[in-house]
Image: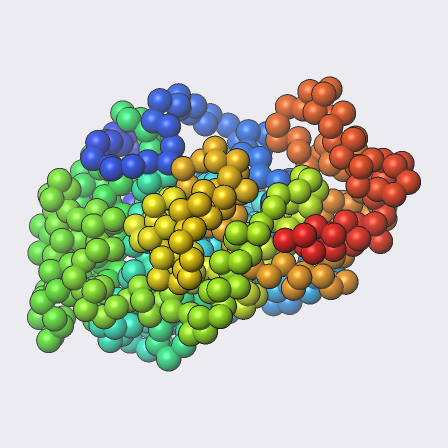
Amino acid sequence: MGNQHIKHKNSVKTKKTQILQEGEEEEEFFDDNVPVKKKTKTDLTGLEHNPLISQVKSDPSDDYTILKELGSGSFATVHLVKHKTSGAIRAMKAIKKGVGFDDEDNELEVINEINILMKMDHPNIVKIFEFYNSPSHFYLITEYCEGGSLFDLINKNKAFTEIQASYIMHQIFSVVNYCHKMKIIHRDLKPENILVNKNENGFVKIKICDFGTSLCFKRGEIQDKIVGSIYYIAPEVLKKKYNSKCDMWSCGVIMYILLTACPPFSGGNNETIIKKIIIGEYDKTKLGKRCKACIDLIDKLLEKDISKRIRADAALKHKWFQIYKSKEIRVDIEDPKIIESYLRNLKNYKKSSQIQEIALAYLVHNHPELEEVDNACKLFGMIDKKGNGKITKEELISGLEPFYKNEKLKEDVDKIFKNLHNGKSKYLEYEEFVRAAINKSIFLTDEYMNFAFNYFDREGKGEITIDDLVSIFSGDILSKSEISKIKKMIKDLTSNHDEKIKFKEFCQIMEKFIASQ
C-alpha cells in the first residue's frame, strides 16, 4: 500500500480561486440549486450520515490490532490492521491533529474526505468502513489493497503495454465520470492516490483514494485553497480559473506515465515544471510506436483549451478502448450459469425490515473481497454501458437481453426496480445491485452473523435494543411515530416480544430473510 494516502511533497497552494461550472453535463446526480455552506471550523457534527459506516468513536484499538506500518508522512501514518471480531484486514490512516501552521485546514481536509467517501458508491473507489476521533488523531479505516499504489508498481515494473494501460485507464475514467456526475472534482489524481487491488499478469484492478482535497462544485463557488501535485496539475488551475476538466488533464499525465514511466512535464524544480505545463507541449517521441488512437486520446486529455478537452464520458467511448476491448476484458464472467443465478436473485429479491436490510448491506459493504461480490461487480460493470456507476431501466433491459430466455424482460426489470426502492429512483446504485444479485446464504456463518450482530450491539451487551437502533438511524431526526415503528419492528421480529434481540434470535431472523430471497 506504501504511501498512497500521504501527500506528495511537490504540491501547490493558491488562494481565492474561482471554480467555474462547465455547464455542459448531460446528466447529474446532484441538485445544482442546493445552497453551498462554507466550512469555517472543524466540526464533526455536520458529517453526512451513512448507517453502513460506524460513526465517530475515539479509540481504534478497541476494535483493531495494528499489524505493521505501511507508510508515513508529515501529518499521517498508514498502518495495516486486523479487525478483532471478523479478522478482516484493513488499512488505518492516522492523521495528527494540530500539526503545522494550517492545522485547522488539515482537519477540514479529513472531514471533507470522510464526507466525500460516504457519498461514494463505486467499485473502483476505496471504501471507508469506520472513523475515529481522538484528542490527538483522526483515524480512517478503509479497504486494504495489498498491491500497494500504482506509483509503486510503475517504479517497479516501468512502462505498461497499451492493452495493460488501457485496462487501468478505463477504470480511472469510470471513477472520474462517476465523480463528475456527482459534481465532485478529485483535484489530486496521481498514481500515489490509485491503489492496486489486484494484479493479474499486468492487468491491474484499481481503487482511487485520498479525497481530502476533493471539491463538491457548485455554480460560481469561491474556494480559499487549491492543492495539487505539481506533475499532474492542469494549466488552468495554475491560472486560478478552472472546472472539473482539471481531472482530465491529470488523467492525461497518468496515461502518459503508464506508457513511458516518466512524466510529460518535468524539470529540476517546480518553476521549470510549471512553465512547461503552461506551455502545454509534451514530448511525443517517448511514446515510441504507440498506436494513433492512443496518442489521439493523450492529445485530447492534455489539451490546454478546457472547452476542447475531452470529458470522462466521451473518453470511455474512445476508439483506443474499443481496439483493446478494455471494458469487455474487465467485466468478463466466464461461466454463464453465474449470470443466470444473479438474474434469478435480482428478480426474487424482496425487501424486509430495516434490521435485515441494514445487516445485509453492512455485510456486503464490508466484504468487497468475496468472489460472489466480485462477480456481481463484473455484471454491474457489464450492464453499466455509460460507465457512470449507475444503471437505468433502459441500461438494465439492454444489458440483460443477451441472457434472457423469456419475453418478460421489461416486466421483470420493472419488478426489480420496484422491489429495490419502490420505483422512486431512476437508477440502481452499485451496492444495492450487488446486495440483490448475490447468493446471500454465503453470509450464514457464525463469523458473518457475529460481525453483523456486533454492528448493532455496539456496547457488547449481547442484545440489540431500541436505543441501539435509534442510534444507528440517528442521522435522521426521528419522530415519536418513527420510534414507535422501530419498537414495533423489534416486537414483530422477536419471539417473546420484549423489545430485545438476542444473538440466536438475530441469526434466526437473518436465516428467515435470506431463505425468502
